Length: 510
Image (cartoon, rainbow, N blue to C red; front, side, top):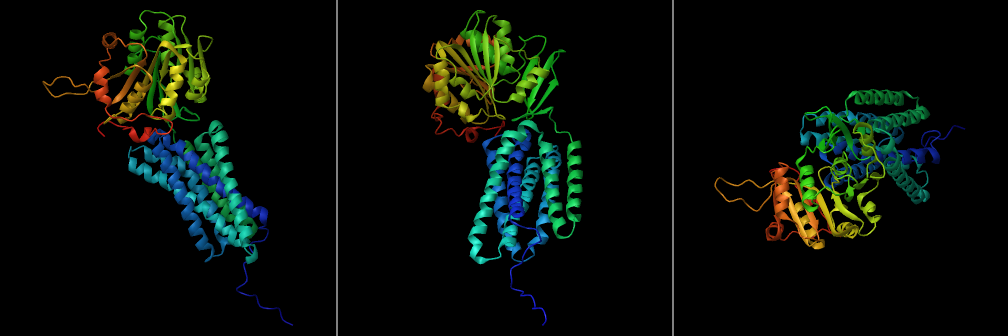
């Protein structure tokens, strides 16, 4: 009796050893890898595009598009080819692309072309995202031996993939970015994907494809590792460097994500290089004449320039600094000579949460100087945040806030309007808008840094102008009816409505 001929319509039994555990591991790992790439991409792009709502939305949108395209295409391909031949190449190619990502993005950023950088960044998100998302329908096809279990198999693998995505998100956000360089995360992930490809191929026909993938990932990763990242330190939130600058041996410039954030003179804490810090000093001196000590809270550390200036010019002052990025604080300690104690405390915390812990009426001064890229974090701009600041200040207290805006200054006007909701007296300090020859000075300020001053006691505008002139800032002061006209019908920013990134114009002339 001869053996029965195989039924060509029978389901493919799959490769030997592809049980539920192996299938689950493939789906879990590939889903986790997609989310690791997505989150790390935000950090990798921040120095060049800024960590804004638009950047986050673009990266998330690209990742979701990749997942959708990969799942759809992977499902169609699984019905037309043997999935056993596709899984390892999907993992292997993804591994090489992921390991190449740091090199590709940084190389594209060098020419300064935003279009080229966007195309490269999109490719490094979409290609591995789509390939890895195709793994799940391939594995699903291999496990579907009985149509009566279709729902169970699909539902189980979908759940496992979702759990993998959650683990990838939490692991990256809470652990990897805090302790591992961005380049190392991507290179390491690329190698792991190559190992997974090797393991799968070993079960089918030997490890040749997987070993080739590992070699490619290591080569790509080594190349990426040789390309300078432009960062002295990759902190949780920033690509940070400290550079010697200025005309003195003690001059140091703190650069975060390619932006000049703070200047510190290690030998002279009273020296203020940037116009906005001199405007801070002018406002503080005008509102608090003399050299008496102040009780201050600072939102954002940067190089801790203003707390040091306050301690040097007003002995006995106390400052508490809320800085969300512990890496920046450590860089301040290592490279910028930061020394803390009872008179100067630096807390690694979100600025808004830090303000909640301040006793009511316990402060003379609050200094707002927190930025994510060129934008003040939205939750520090709202009326509810200003309620916390107002509560912490005593009756004569002053809030000074730095922000950056250009063009129509829609964000600046909205923030000034919001300040007016909480304080009786508000002024905006900024570079005067250019006027045509022979024209009277306009009641306008131009883009760039603007410093806002708010208090419940009257502002001495003449003293503000005098102090700005004395510090050679060259800025004008908008207050009273002039400020009201400038603010116009700008919206009040609240926790329910604060489109900070949409209001912000990030560059001059836009």
